[in-house]
Length: 174
Length: 382
Image (cartoon, rainbow over all chains, first blue to last red; front, side):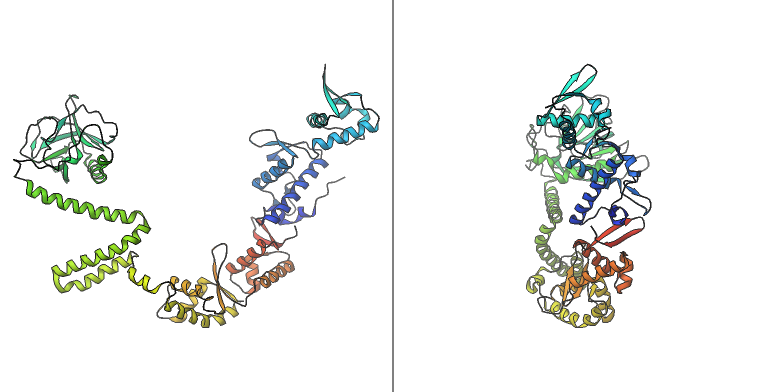
């Protein structure tokens, strides 16, 4: 299934940072949602800023417009404020993209666990993200760091506990 | 040379070194001093000289001892010199290399050059007189006391001193006046008085010729921007002239404004008006002042200033909302427009059409597309 671009993607002004404050806010929101849905569609969990500038996400070759580095940084800052992005380095060159926030993942995982009556069981992280049982689930293939954060969110809620085992980590659901 | 005292050459707490120069020989008046060539040092407080070979031989004199000084150009076989005329020795002077001297001036001979910079720095220090503000532990005699038995040069020295003080006063006046422009305006009145008195003095001395010179002098002041303060006070801000001018503009600009869609940049108005007048042209200042009076005189014109600073004259009947609405229509029709295209469409100048588009953007009706192709405006679909 190919990615569906939002109408703004083909609207040239979308690629110029608008000076009018109201217009700018709408523009940035549209960019944030575009970035997140693009990452979700392509299952991207990390982004390299330099590569991003050239990727179709920020560069529409058809209308010959692309976002400037400055605007990209502004969009990323918006995402960070919303909790969907985390910088991996001080120079802001690589980041983690959480098109779903850890809490949301946590909820999904817990739903699956309770739906299958497996509360009180222990799982290894590998089982959850790569096990046969979870193949139909959205969180299948979730990268370990993201999975860990989601489970930590559940842990804070008191619905799970992360356990250290011999060859890795596991989790028990309550 | 009898004004110098022995010193250890160390600077005091508040004293700073300004400049030093090697290869300086001292002269007692016109005679070579008994010392060899050495280093001359100028500090904020003193003039110091130290022997090159024997560093223990170090003498100093407070700068307040200096009456005035001048340059003496060098020649073939002669180095350039600075001649320093001195006040009489104060009674409490510390002992120095010379008990007495028949000269009241010394010379510094710059065998290895450096006199230009030294002279400049010495002038600076003597103007600033920093030693007066920053007292050091050793008492510095100011040399105002007159010595009995030194009757010979006192009269001339006294007169010289008075002239020097007066010169410093005028100098200080001028530098103070220029420090702060608002202070200048206050001083301006004083300056005008001063200029009048100087003009009168010239007139007294030289007779009739000075009429022109007085006028010239006043015109110099005027060109500096010090118009006679009196006129500004009597006329105030709403001069009759400007009022008449505003009325005239009201009549003159009606037709051109309507032709140009109700709005003209002030620069266009200026050109139009002055071209029509031919003689007795308006200054930009007068034009702006006249335009500012449109509203108070209830004329059907208005002066308007955009955010970017552009000033326009527009008809009062001109409605900005209508303009913006029509701008939006035009842009939507064509999909997108640049300022140039819009200008062509409406018959407006590019400057004004850009202002209108920017205003529409500010109101949220348009959005911009800034790329290498230029700046385009689209309807705001966000």
